Image (spheres, rainbow, N blue to C red):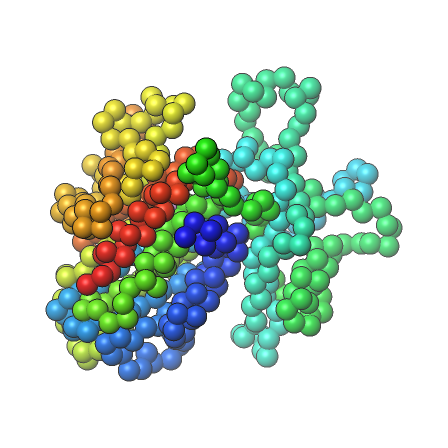
Length: 434
Ligand code: CO
């Protein structure tokens, strides 16, 4: 099970490729890809399909035997974007000695220092000229033959205070080097040349066909397990691809025909606030659920009833207790690695959990014979936010915010637990069993 997760993480360096990975696995399992521009068609018990938005969010549905108005939706939500650096337009900067570096812009909230001195690569989507200007084509690329870039530190000899904490400039310090170009014939357009070579592996293309791209930096070192008993996972993007994958595994493990309707919703742009057409702040999922209810029953009333009966698990990683920084954690609620899924609470409702939804989720864990933990911020620490409450503002659904505990959230490489992944898949499978 863990090797499958590691393979998924390595094949998903950015949101677009994570979405494609999930789509491919759903297709292999018999889920049909529907085009949202067309009518949904015949929605009947046992129908299994998925839709995507912007190539960077994906929503899978398995229609239950009972009418939606009677059983509601059973939803698991997660996000497929992670903090990284986006390549800016006109990114190439020529420096002394022929060195070429790339101009970048921060995406989300990375721990920037963790991106230094490690082999990096590029991944994302390239937009090609299509049959007319309104229909460009998209190709996904991931440079993985060899690492392409690195953001190098300044030597300690030039900054003796480096270990006392360094203020980093996003514009000055975070630009990766791409190569050394001494050939006078090589002019601009180096990145475009690289893109042409990479796209050509999938289909013939000329530089003039490349209209634009969304490319991001990614760690080039594969995910792995470590520890005395291989009990830990080391990878970038555990937040939140580990939860996306747990949801996917649970969906694929569920019997095709059950009473309730299952929804796996993987959103983009959680790390930048969710307010995009493909983010959790968008009405896209609400529209899809309403279209399904209308296709099934012909009445809008069925949708509203289904929402009132629905339950949502908003799955996003939690903070594991760090053995070197115990003072940062709540004295009585600090989940540990390997201790099972974590329910997150916040009095200001940055998390959707309340006593009702937490009780329901804890009971699901109990039935699955999985331990369950609780997280609350240390009251003097601000903490983060997630999908649950943002989604609840467009779909007023009862839900719990939970996630597996990890260390070093938003580091280029986070640390998770092998046991927790197995627990989480079990709990999700139990949720979708009926
Ligand atoms: Co997250």
